[in-house]
Length: 372
Image 1: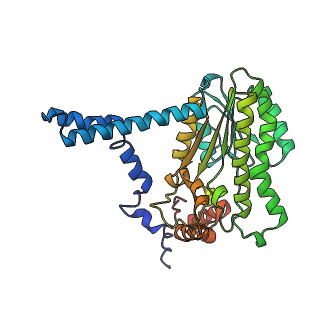
Image 2: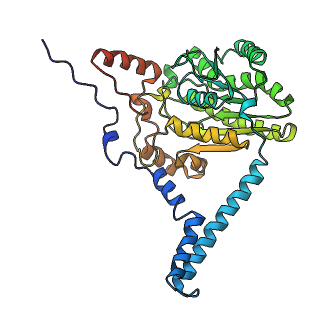
Image 3: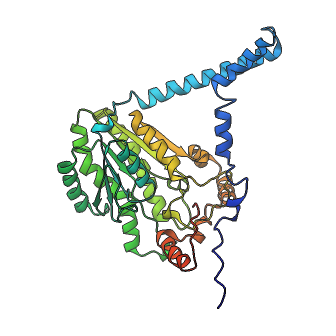
């Protein structure tokens, strides 16, 4: 009898290394909660004073200047956020009706489960069945969000069965992962309908009732850094995400004038560890770490709970990605080569590829899920 085949090798061998969790984001987070935090900064001159150091001593003056600078920076950031995002709306989870597109798996499912457990009423719209069957407080509606008629029908059902939606999270997305010349027109149309036009369909279906609600509401738009930089084999996806970001900015400007009680949140993550991008190569996990859905979910939930407008970008490079367009063309090309953004999709398998790998490895005695 032949020996059983060996288990499949991990897609990222470096994932088992002790330094794998180390990234620029972790370094920044440590510094932000230590040397760049006002409380810690003011501890240093207090420690010097506890050692009977005079107030005019050079170390004391330097530490006080540093603590003052850090405190001033935090105050300026707070003022900037208040001016940019305005006053928060009141959020009462017992009265919130949250609609999430693409909520049957990944990021959408995480947000749906959290809000369901916290007492909110949650409606999930997805063409696929929910991965875990049922979740407390979550109602599933089978809906292809690329079909405006289905969206309108489900919106009427939600209004009748659950009440007026107060939070809309446009999260649904698909990825073809093919070069443009290899895609059919049908595939391109399906991609643009799901990744871009669906946002218009859901907004037209849910926003009018939300605008009539005195309590207002929140619209969350999930975009991507790919909408800014583009990438090989992602022409359709990048075009849609660029359009989604532009839609968010225009919608925010309109609502600020006509319905100031409605908040908007834009989410622009980097590569997410979800089946949507299964198999994508990650060249540099230090400067461009894969983002875990749970981390994005925590940020989105915190923004909704706060009742404020927000722009959420993660990991660190996603917060500065707009500066990419300012670089000279030669430096942009160099940055693309160093980041490997145009070769990352060569190993792409996607959701269907992951299902196939699960079937194959199940026969071989196990399947090991990696982060992508």
